[in-house]
Length: 181
Image (cartoon, rainbow, N blue to C red; front, side, top):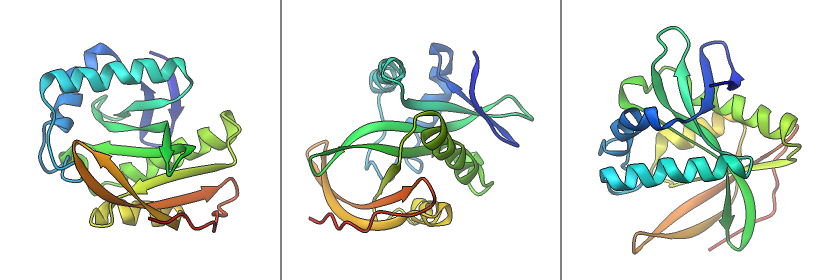
């Protein structure tokens, strides 16, 4: 599989069906999935993977994050088109296996995704939506230079989940337009 982005320590590439077990390790880990408030069944993991295949055809999606040194898939990161308060935006998101937390992979992979969005896709602004209690993801967003521009409630799995809306522009400038509840 041809790499999408290569960083100092990581290769980001499209996911393959062969990545199911690695994806399952993440999506079935209660600690990794704490912001989602549930883990995924095997069928839901396959559904997640199938959605990425569809997203790739639309020019975005979560990519496998592979550590160069070991060749291991350590997580996923990417760009997805999503709806935030009725506006279609490009969102940066990532998820890592628990064994790879605290190694800087989230920031490194996310920076590569931002560069791809700005340089390859020609996007002027990228969003990130983060649950306020997900302090690790809040820190990653802030370290990348994202700034809070609003809040919204995502209805997911029958629950209302509050999220902060972060944004960053091509030159690190964020959109101050307030988007609220």
